[in-house]
Structures are given as structure tokens and as C-alpha cells.
Image 1 (cartoon, rainbow, N blue to C red):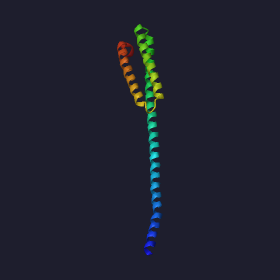
Image 2 (image 1 turned 180 degrees about the horizontal axis):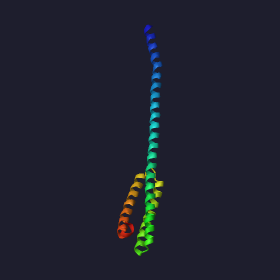
Image 3 (image 1 turned 30 degrees about the horizontal axis):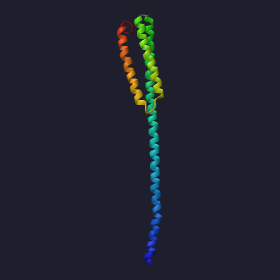
Image 4 (image 1 turned 90 degrees about the horizontal axis):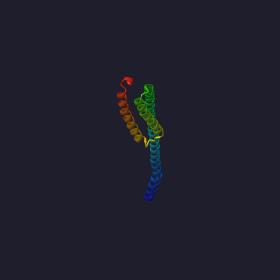
Length: 143
């Protein structure tokens, strides 16, 4: 009889203590999931903020280049020669391309940002190369 009472007591004891341990484990899992969720939200916010900062930086660079192109175009208009008109048309094409890139940047997402950024870098390099050629043709006007 003592053995049966002892066995029943042990069974009741372990039955009662198991849910407490399970509750503690469940609580720890829930706390861990909550922390993970908060971490992911913070990471997403940080990534979004980083993307917005990168986009703002690119937009500022484009706006500065367009302003510079406008000044160059104005200088070429003052020259009035046929050669300057052709150069002005090329610079106006570059400016139009930069306007398109500005729209691409504004509409780019995190998924498309790298491709947009590479495309912008290519556009900048092409415009710089073209400008060096034009600048060489009009040394007296732009030096």
C-alpha cells in the first residue's frame, strides 16, 4: 500500500511539475520569437532607411550634374557656332538621360536598387567621357 501511495504521489508530483516547466519553455520560446520579430523589424527599418539615404544621395548627384549641364549648355548657346550647337544637342541628350535616371531612382525598390545604381554609374561614365571630348573641342570656352 505504501508503494502504491508513493507511486501515486510521485505521479501526481511529476504531473503537476511538468506543465510548469512546459509553461516556462513556452514562455521562453515566445520571448525569443518576440525578440526575433523585433530584430527583424529593426533590420527592415534600417535597410529601408539605408535605401532611402542611398536614393537621396544619388538624386542629389543627378541634380548637381543636371545643374552643371545647364551651365555648360548656356555657355555653348553663347558661342553660337555650328560646332557648339552640335555639342549642346549632345549635352541636352545627356541631361534628358539624367532626368530618366532620376525617375528610375525615385521608383526603384530594394530589389531593383543595385541594377538601378549600376545603370546610373554607366550613364555617369558615358556623360563624363562625352564631356571630356566636348571640353577638348572648346578649350577656350571651358578652361
